[in-house]
Image (cartoon, rainbow, N blue to C red; front, side, top):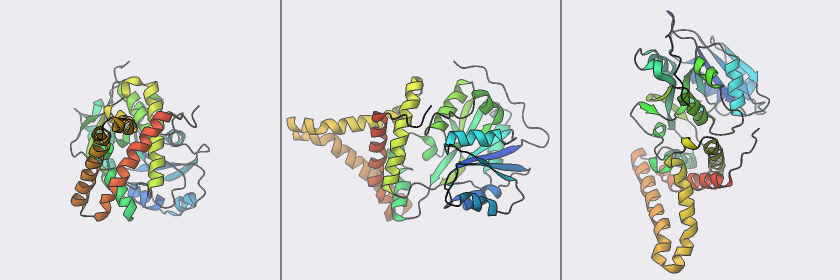
Length: 337
């Protein structure tokens, strides 16, 4: 049931106070570049950074400590290693009126905080918003990773998730990362620590139920490093599918067509051999159509990016779809409770 939102009274004379929160574990490869991007923000008043470390074993914590900055950077322990628990711990340890969520392998542009605060400070638009979400700019380094990045940026791969590709700002059901009003996050109870994946989507669902809106603005364009192998991509999307079903089972009204499309695809591919026994053309219809659409999407990304590696999307897109579908069907609520 929706309730009337508690309208924000706006920033004080010196603007909103801001805290950047992160939950990380074994992010040695990206943590320095990630923090350097945060510390280079052009926001014109002091802000702080709180990092919940999930007991990293790869030197992540030492790398954080080695960074010299006038911006306060604190580390708190996250013994569970779970993202939702870490984010709640980081939020609990900070004092900002505005909470900026960042990942250990995401890289914020210099105007990220200032642009988000500008949106939240708008006297007409701002009071409606509980979270300003970002656009995910997926960039790969190696050949395989660039193909995966292309798949994660194409509507064929990700459906109508606007934060993956859209240049149009507006209200959405969810978005990438986010800049939240602190009192809204506190009011809805923070991140659900029983979820291993889909925590952001589920939090945005509760924010919308509380009467606020989720706003997407592509000016908040965050670079994100995807998985670097098909095996890691399959594992990631298997978890996405598994935990998406958990969220849908708890909140049936939240289901979207894009979330069920991979499951329908898996079912159609499964019955294709049976149909092929009746008529070979029927048996080839779904696999052939799907292969054609995936190939066309991969070719489009290759041309757009002028990068032969982008054609790797022809393998990455089916990996994403089928791994998600298998995870959804198996519905493993692992690590919850």
